[in-house]
Image (cartoon, rainbow, N blue to C red; front, side, top):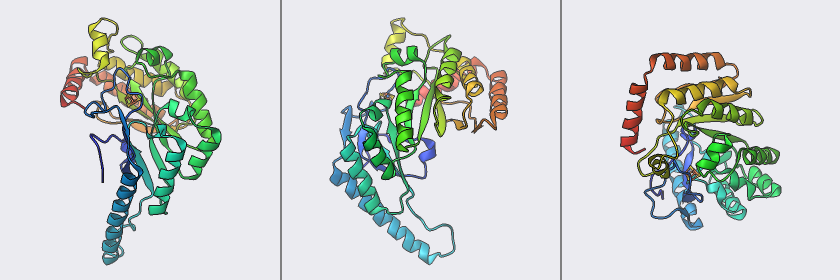
Length: 312
Ligand code: SF4
């Protein structure tokens, strides 16, 4: 399989076949982001021949697994690829015809595959017509992960995300009309010191108008080689404390009024909570209250420093 640099995927895609169709990100401007810093280019498409070679390799590997499974008949489920996750910062930026071809190739090599996911930017959806989105839905594109980060326009503008809250709402409605489900990735702390709860409330007000399947939250970490670090040094932005970021998460959970799976995702979080809203809201709030009562700014900061030093 061809993989370039660190491969990022949401934890809930752990069971998916990871297929590299792009590397890097077309936007490459968010001030906090250092995800693809090790790549010698901002964004690259994989040649379709390489994508097909990887599908063939995965198909061959699955065949030998199945042959092994026949020998061990009765043990576990027959191994199958039910979902493919296209890797890269935003493969949904690929033009419609390329995404269609990739979808056709996935179906050709894995007829049993039910859905195809990937990371997407809101702007990637905007570049496709309703008819194109519907065709992608028919090919299995579903459950795409959108790193919206927040619904707070001030934070989105400062961080150079390249869209506003209204764009998130408009484009997710278009996805819904086409039959493509989606998840949101939230970033606690993105609004900076003193604005966490306000950002959470604005985000919840936006998310409550959508039908996201999962809201997964990460916690902002300022890496030394980020543009954000330069803004801090220039005195243009102040990072929220770790307890404030937890309070922001609490406010988000409290304000959400849609049925959605909520989880803190990945090791940028020192505190892990997950559960279904609205049924498990009180338990989630209780766990966050417990973390706020027991946690100290110093201990949480020390976790953040260790995380920063690890370079993730
Ligand atoms: S869109 Fe995502 S991957 Fe691209 S720069 Fe922004 S945060 Fe990083």
